[in-house]
Length: 240
Image (cartoon, rainbow, N blue to C red; front, side, top):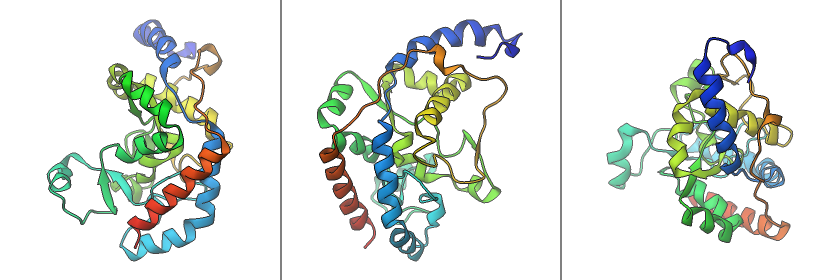
């Protein structure tokens, strides 16, 4: 982290120490997987955008150009929607359905079932480096809604130990470390965010080369092809 953070000894001495440990245990998908999803979205996004729009859903919230969103129309429920979601209510604002990380988990389990099962047995859970609102700065229109495509974006689904996720979500500098790692991995294969949408970085920066990183999780071409076919079938079922 840049030394210009002088005066913030807690950040330098404690957060950096924590970050050096945590970085070894946060697993992202291999960029080749994300690239394959982006290419598949290019092939189908025009059709899916039209059908989302017909359902009264703004497709820009999910399928911006070069988006890695796996399930357009699926978003996490807001706190105010917990009751309606659990009761089986079927009409949601800007969404086909609401979810509590089942779809993001499915992305991993469909691509690498044994590895995903191993993570969950070891008490790992889904971690989103970028949440749909708090980490980004966007137009007033988007800020009133949210970049819902981030919820099932393959570029925004990692696995991390459950015991660390609360800290990673609440400590701004830890979160920006993993957002920076996310950008390093995927900015050449996808648009993590839509055009003209930025990230709340704050002052200073991380030197990513100073950290030991967990290896990215990969799948062979046959697994990726099978995953793409399965996810297309799921999207088609959501968009009658």
